[in-house]
Each structure stands twice: as C-alpha cells, then as structure tokens.
Amino acid sequence: MYRTPDGKRRSKTFDRKVDAARFLTSIESAKLGGSYVDPQRSVITISELARTWLAGKVNLKPSTWERYAVIIRVQIEPIWGSVRLAEVQHSAIQTWVGELAETLSAASVQKAHRVLSLVLASAVRDGRLSRNPAEDISLPQVVRREHLYLTHEQVADVADACDEYRLAVLFLAYTGIRFGELAALRIGRLDLMRRRATIAESVTERPPAPPRRKFLLPLCFPWPRSA
Image 1 (cartoon, rainbow, N blue to C red):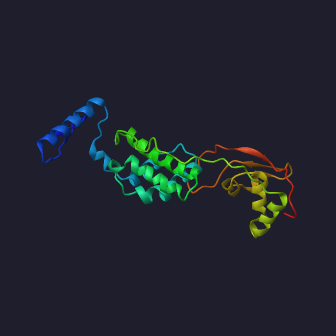
Image 2 (image 1 turned 30 degrees about the horizontal axis):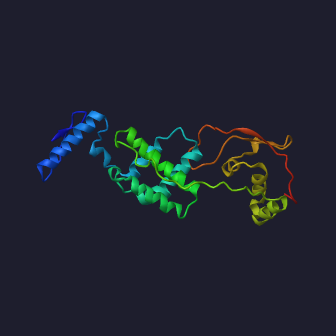
Image 3 (image 1 turned 60 degrees about the horizontal axis):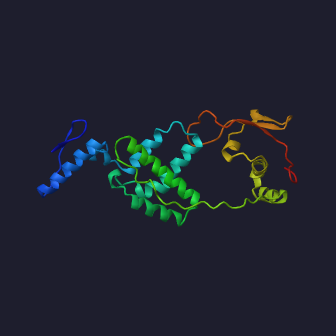
C-alpha cells in the first residue's frame, strides 16, 4: 500500500518482499523528485488521448486542424490507436518512423512524428507521463529539390484535359492561391473591372475560423488559348 502525492491510496502486489520494497522506494523517490505518475492515469489509449488533444486545439487554422486530423486517422491510429499510454516506448516510436519512411516522403514522416510528439507532450503536461518518449527520434532529412515550372503551353494542355474544370486549373496556375481558397471564392469578391479578387476564406471540413490570410489578388495574367 502506498499513497500518491495527492494523498490517494494505491496498492500493488508482489511475490517477493524485496520487490515490494524496491517498488516503494522508487515511488517515494519519484514523488520527491517530482516525476511521479499515477499508473491509473496512464491507462488511456493513444486514440482517446489524440482525439481529446485535437478537440482542444481551438487555436489552429482550419486547414492545420484538418491536416492533424488526417495524420491521426491515417498514420497514428492504425498503429497506436489501441496502445495504452503507459506502454508507449521510445524504441517502438523509432521503429514506426522507420516504417513510415519506407512509403512516405521525409516531410510527411516528420509531420506524422510531430503530431504524435505533440499528443504525448500534452500527456506529460497533464501528469500522465513523466517524459515524452517521442523525443530524440532519428528522422529522415528532407532533400530540397529544384522546383519545376510549367510553360504557358503546358498549363493550357493540363487545363484542356480537365474539361469543365479548365477555368479552375487556369485560375490556380496563374494566381498561386490554394484550392480551398478558390473553392471559397464568391462572385462578390471578384472585381473584373479592376482585374482583382479578394481572398478571404478557405473551404475546410471543419467550421470556418476567422481568416488569417486575407489579401487582394491582382488578376493580371495571360489566358492561354481561349478561357
């Protein structure tokens, strides 16, 4: 029998008295050092923790929130979803990162690891873990490659191949805005006389947040062939 730092009683059984004494010594040492973690608070699964963490990230842009949600659903939950927090090991995370690197780009692997690390860091702040097992993981390095750009004729060929979406392809190619911003563009934000558009919203699956990216977009580009 022992007590947690907040005075709650906990018990654990051992076959040998010496093992019980060592366990009690480790508990008292952790309490004095401020690293004690109540085992009962670490039985939550990674899936439960990740969803609770994401639900509380009200400061994120809708697009960032959506990207985190996809990473949790596609990369994290299939492997870690049913794993209890107390069972997460640094070596297992390193193995997971290595497996991701076999099929994903280095940038995608880094993003997946970052989300898992953020989830586990929240558990440390919440007193569920004494340390973050996702720290000091070896990650693949992103190799910067030279950007390639389409010619006017190549842009026109792509647009022509998209049939009814031809105008959308041309607009995206010559303005550089994001697809979500184009999808949210309304007639009232187009000023064809002055050849400009106001970009103020972006379409996401999550309810819209106050815009963080709002600007006037000049529409001064050559339409190849007939738009």
